[in-house]
Length: 451
Ligand code: EPZ
Image (cartoon, rainbow, N blue to C red; front, side, top):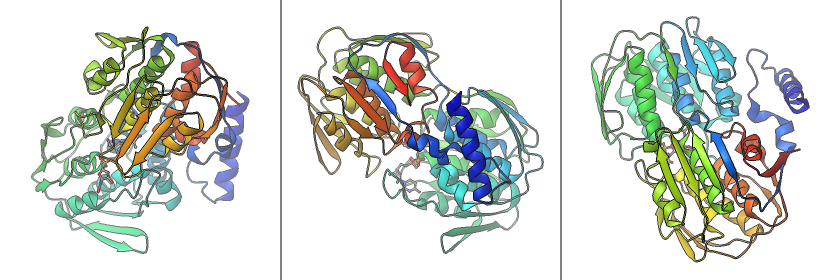
């Protein structure tokens, strides 16, 4: 309660001090969370049931998509995260009315008429680049700041920009800003992506649903979050075929209308909690999941010696015997092993009885957690894309710092099995993707609390 009050006061202070009273300051800037830490006393097997939150990476583009509608949308199962707050802040800044009540968000885009996004808001969340296609399609122009690199590496946006240009957006780069305009309605076309980028696929979908004519995306991303975005848009009246496959076809329609929609469950949060169950030798039941979305990670947990059973929208994971190494994890676009699950699964493998090998193929700089895992006693060597983890007998509690979202979650996973106390700082990263990590883990027996 006190933490919540302080968050609010700090945000209000920031809004005034930055002269940004027009919109809600997102939680990513909340200094109190930067200072707060998780205290984990490891060594307790996790037992019990957890309900899995809605998917951040679905909720974000779907929130952006509401901007394109002629009438309000009602979204359910939106996780309570700083990134979701950041999206809502941008929608409000653009002129939408946004009402958030727990995991339900109502967006009324009728009065949205602003076409720029302030730099402070762009920097809050790298995926705000996906606003570009939607704003251009709705208002015929946009001005946003260039999203820089991030904790995962340089993260270029060339595929986003070249695709939008092909749809008819004129883009000028001006000292860190992107000034964009269209000459009337965007025009459908055939776009071939050199890599199945999730964000670029979303940007194209958003820009083309109301374009004139048909757009085809070849080598589109196939992630479940793409399918979720397509399902939302289809419910709003868009004509989209092939989402979840490599070729997506979008037949432009004049208008789309808001709808009521429930966001899919978060497969990466589920995979993180599976890793926590595995490393502690626990027995967890995860409820409200989509089993199909987790198929790419199940082999790793079974190889590690876990029993994974599924039934409807639930799964049970338990480990009684030894923790075995995972021989060869190569991160790939869906349906390959997800890059977002690499760090938590690596944390699990630090205590395995043998050598695990990871090959990170999606992001250049996604091994930052390895140096912090080493502080806990892990034996990890990194050479370019490859990380080799020699399992150790024990991890030992230590102060560690989260420097990115999934890397931070990996530190929590390792801390749950480390002997003694681990203090995790850098929680603003973890809070971007996990709505209630300490509450969830406490409820299944972990000794973890936030101070
Ligand atoms: C999405 O990021 C997710 N973010 C990421 O989740 C996830 O790791 C990633 O997809 C891959 O699955 C959201 O959905 C909000 P990409 P995105 O475009 O869209 C290169 C998490 O932890 N690329 O598929 O930014 C890029 O540099 C996060 O929740 C270009 O070269 O990912 C990267 O190497 C972090 N040019 C690769 O493609 C471009 O124009 C994949 O990026 C775009 C991307």
